Image (tube, rainbow, N blue to C red; front, side):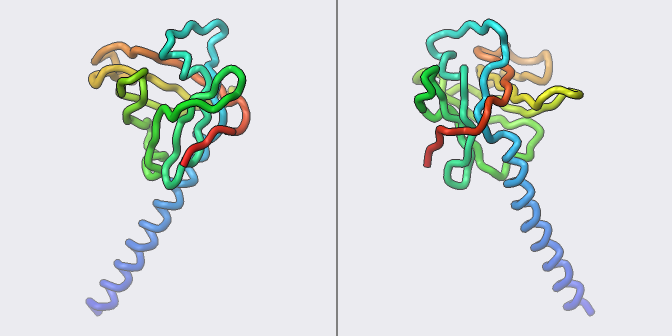
Length: 154
């Protein structure tokens, strides 16, 4: 009887792990696409302009954010997240800011009857977009989906 319970527990754990990997991958789709800053008259620094339009797409087993120029030319990879973190409420990692790497907070949301949006903040390691503690972001923007991603990387 104990052997049978062990087999059932192993099968249940295997099924849960298998499903969680599938669900995490599926949740990534909400981030995929071309995203453009939704402000009417945004102002950018020389480093911030790289974040005006971002294509988020699969890159190997991860997903990446690639800068897109005004002429739709693909630029540098700004950030990379493991697909397994895509179902987290908010993604926290590092992203390029000129020659430096800054803390990145990335999230996805919807508001009643409005199109989904993505928000992004870059700043020092103590930056926190969800509260009033920590430092203010160096760069922060809300994005609207603007079609499918065309810029990808390996």
